[in-house]
Length: 455
Image 1 (cartoon, one colour):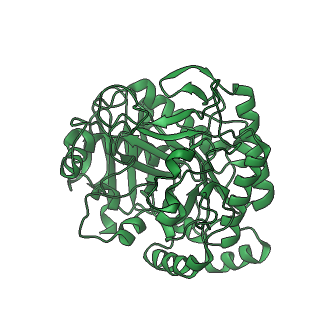
Image 2: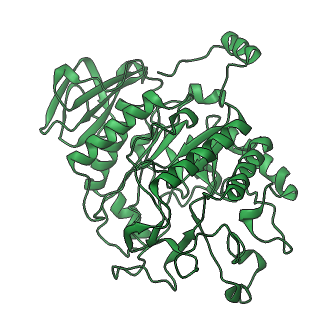
């Protein structure tokens, strides 16, 4: 449970070096929303800076966060080889960070470091790029690319933007595999982490595609039956990268990894949080009970076993009806009653089972940038700090959870039936404004209730 830090105790903590992350983080109120790469789409009258500051944690490329890029030039245009930030943009980045923190003092900024896949441009195609910075992440002949049996770089990731059921190598590939077992490549990523740490601009890093259960270096984006690297070699490389980074940045720098809904016990000593990007196989459907139970179990595990300060991030994906929908369609679909119910459920699952961050956004299958989302009024509720433990069942009803906060309660229901919860006095249900002591919550739904004496 997070605790409020007084001015006197804050002074002592600073003197004795106990503070491990942004002090403001200890004062943030809940719900606590994060941004994964891409931001809010339903507030066009709010500028980009204010939309970013709505979140308490965000990760992306450094330029997307603070308008500062890696130090590349026409002589050295490959961002994967850069080991410092562009000096000419440092002042702008510091000013932007100050603006963001003035809007939200609790905001944590993390930079994604690419190690598993990245943009590849062949030597032939390099000659055709319009701007020098549009080359690949590494030079095309770099030993850091992972190559297949034909000695060509291997596609690592793509998205089916035209919904034909396959990834077109010509225009739907987003990344090629990197050989992160290469010690020199590992040292590069460590040096990038150190540069971010020493800049004092960022609070930590994100490492995507984190897996301790199987290999991710598939021989083809459409064929996962075999991999180029073994599960053992991939795991050893991941742990080596973590150890090297943690040795260089110490305890204060945050490390978040995208492990989806998997537990990562071997990485736990080095990692502050899991980005739970909760995959579902069908974009037109929501989650089933088995998937929801896995979310709960992994989130509780991460809250107990990862290093402090913990920054676990739970993201649920919406139901998509129109796969090729435009901006207006996306905004409207996210606001459907079905998706609002899923948003409430994912949000209240996070609030009852963690002290972390939550997001409800687009299913990654659709052809627009991933993780775009609406901002929901539900997230504007001011619950304050939790005053009760995690995963507490309401009156011993299996699958019905309640958690008290300073300013109210959160209830999360996946019990298999509609349930009624009763309070000692009237409370306000945030979703509908109803003021009563008894409230009904459907199955696979959740609610936030505010104390009336906090009006």
